[in-house]
Length: 454
Image (cartoon, rainbow, N blue to C red; front, side, top):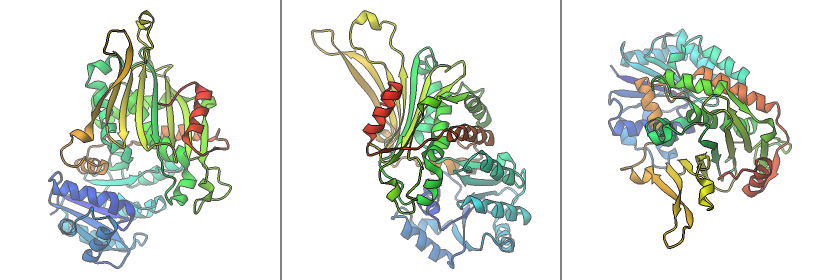
């Protein structure tokens, strides 16, 4: 009997070939996951396992090794919207599973298909509600607003309890996102100053140089606000702003994140929506589209720790650099006036992409006879220190799913509160500013807030 059965619905899709199979292969090759695993790749195409493996290897730019995949992957042909096909799937799963087998069902499919798959899995008793060995996994977007998110959740709760549901936001699997709590609470120098008496502001940015890369169908319905702010940036904000949890187990961490979301407000006057010049010329985009490809807003977390501290959120496409970073700017030193020198504020940079690492800016005396000052940055590059390849986000996420660890997965109340926050912003959305470059947007932000986003 297998230790783990990983059933992928949507096995011929891009997510499976680019992310899921490479991650599982790496975990398997590195003995990080049980060798007694079977991946059941479900699809409707007329493949056998060998033909399926040829297909995914060809589509993944040589990241996949067919010989390794053949040790644990089986292709299973079925129509996932046909209830009758699930009895055959059950028969197959039963031949390779026992009472302690972990059965992981990954919905790498469109959200409108979730209902059929969850219902049919339940009807043939492939999954059992409250059975911790039976787990359901799916990706963001978790709906397109609060109402749609509630409908998805209420439907899934018919067949699974909350502990069995793993909602993936791949950003949470990135090394530096996982590192935020370690930096904050495992280092006394930051633990003691992480509050509104010493922190001036926090900037959270996710900038891209590319456009929508052919994703017109998804992106024009979503836009930057839903695609990036609702999930990635608000999750980062919660980790930066939360209080110390009772423990670092999943629910205790999430409970503190919830307190952040409950106390999160935005400044209506700070909102900037932009659309890159040429967006309406993209294939599949309506010439009258008002979808934003850039968002800036100022938020506040009205907790005792951070009351009054601005949290600036910025994300967009076709910007100056590809970069995801958190910048924590500290207040001026109490000795600032005595120095009579152009001292800079200290800044902590938590660098998420393209290269993971830290930076800390300090004031230092310029070597020489005069009391001149310069701003210097202490840097640490995680990738530079890593042996071999850096762990990919999906490797960590899939390993945690197999082991039942839920800290890096979003709980329903997080989804509910973040969608409520986003829906309130959407009500105030205005016509986007057309921009040719980032400088245009940077000037708008400075004119509005008097703040440079660097």
